[in-house]
Amino acid sequence: MALAKTLSSPMPIDDFQGWLSAFTEPTVLIELAVIAVCASLAWALVHVLRKAFGMRDTPSIWFGKRLVDGVLFPLVLLCLGFVARTVLGNYVGLAVFKVAMPVLVALLAIRVGVKVLQVAFANAPWVRVFEQTISWAAWLGMVLWVSGLLPVMLNELDQISWKVGTSNLTARTMLEGLLTAGLVLLITLWISSAIESRLLRSATGGELSLRKAVSNATRALLMFLGLLLALSAVGIDLTALSVLGGALGVGIGFGLQKLAANYVSGFVILAERSMRIGDNVRVDNFEGAITEINARYTVVRSPTGRESIVPNEMLITSRVENMTLADTRLHQSTTITVGYDSDVDEVIALLVQAALDQSRVLRDPAPNATLNAFGAHGLEFSLSYWLSDIENGQGNLRSDVNLAILKSMRLKNIEIPYPQQVVHTR
Image: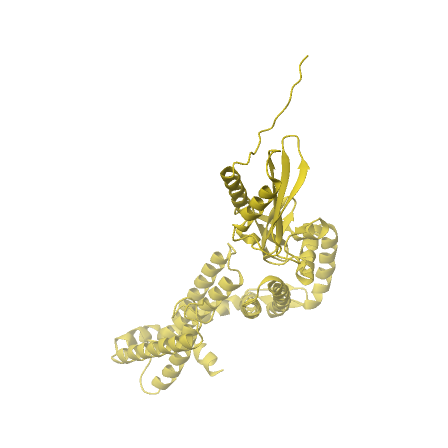
């Protein structure tokens, strides 16, 4: 309360000239020295904490990517500055601190807003716009605060009022409500991001999918509660949400069926764990590994680098081949035709050896070669084998096996016949 009271007392406009003249006093050098000491202490403290928590190479909201990039540095500097301002104000007149404190408050507000948005919505294109908006709003508020125009502007905004139902709203209450709503939403985003980071830390496979489901549900719940608190802060009667909820239900029933189905399907997939991040699937003739399971869609990435965005409803209502659901091993086979005069036992041994020469081919179960048919052009053999690292590709292994087969057949002079036809003429 003392900090809020001290920081909320602006400078009267009549004292503005006197405050400017105070910058010519020798005590200004003392204030600058004290601020430099506070900055050095804040830097040292953040450096020690960053090293103690092992955050040197791990970006976070508190510590940021660099030493003075996170929220912690301006927060510590603000606290030290407040203590120094209180102590120093008993001995000398203050001029620099009247500017430094609002600047530190604005810097802290910018860091909190920007860092939370960067963590909560890392890849969203609109984050940059919101970051600039927060920066401009914070620096504008700081200028109005230092110049003493802030209370004048708030008093003028109090004069602008209108009646909404039984409530009488003013421009000032709307502005304060929007700022409170933004603060509440930032806090809920911060908490949900911290929970998500803790849940997803060192999780893989099915465990990662389950934790992702819990993380999405937690974020949705916190955002909903934050939205309710924000609406209350603005002055909106929450009983009106019952009407809005009914209208939303009708809208979902008619126009948003597919969208709602995708969201529900996303939570079903994450809860059932029928498909997990890292699984290799084939859906709608597209094959690849699941890299992301979001609330509305799932991202499948093929070995060639192409990505398919699949609506979650399709994964629930259509046939999906999950090649690594119960077993990460995958079966492959290749066929070859040799001449009828070839040694069958030798051909089988060469085929098995060609598979065993590849390090990616599993030894258990072992490769197996069989004589499948007596074809029109020669003896048809089939070689089957298993692999477990499907993420490294399938076609490249099949190619290596085929090349090894071709090389061994040529070394042993085993004929791989061309297609033949016998034509009888009269």
